[in-house]
Image (cartoon, rainbow, N blue to C red):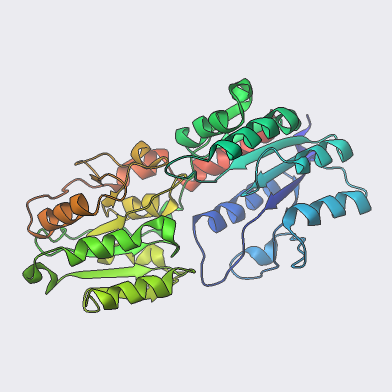
Length: 362
């Protein structure tokens, strides 16, 4: 295929928010730039319009009154298009939407899976429905991309092993140059912690609050944990902090567009999540030379190595987390390694963009 004659559509069920600019935003901007350099036309279908950052340079087609799937379906039904590729991000896999695309277009369809799975798996009924959808609609997707090996395996588990020839893993990446690395020595006793997370129940921050409440009082006196992020569970978390009289420990900082220069001021990031796909905040933290304390869900263990560049504890195990925090606060456990090198070599946004761009050459 002549790459210079390509015209691609990218459908992203991802809200564009000026106060929440993260790794995926940088990926979208960088991917658009690479496509334009190679004379590839790109139409972006998001839930909303935006002009912050480099979004003003993207050709965005949005309709707040419709889902991105409906918006795109209506667009191809009512406009003459010559799309050679259709790529989806954050869109449910194996639905009738993909059958619609294939019916109306002769494009290559690539579905990128960013979706985490429940810790205890899906109920039987939902498992059966997913298998049926895999048989009905999996044939309409030419390439599945998992953002971690965990995700790629989950696609097979959800929709059927017959899809294996269509699955490839392309790791998420972060913009290394915009993340300032910590250069001074980490504090060995009474280190400073941060949390970077969307505030919802599945992120497990309530487990962290309960773990801190179980610490000896003397250890809580100088303890500092800043929480960056926003979401529907914020009030419940704030109420829990008040219930345990931990207002002097936890500080809710809200969303931040400058986290790349913020990580360096801390010693460890805590991510007690119950479900994950492949965490960009973990990559960002490690790129800033800040070790990560997290759970073994999703693709976390594909980048965090216990006792080397962070610590892994069992999901929802509040007692173990409390003991781990106590050992870190007392300096009994300590990460001395520079954690940035791994991210530079394997998980940069440049590598992510190049791998995704290579799919257009297939």
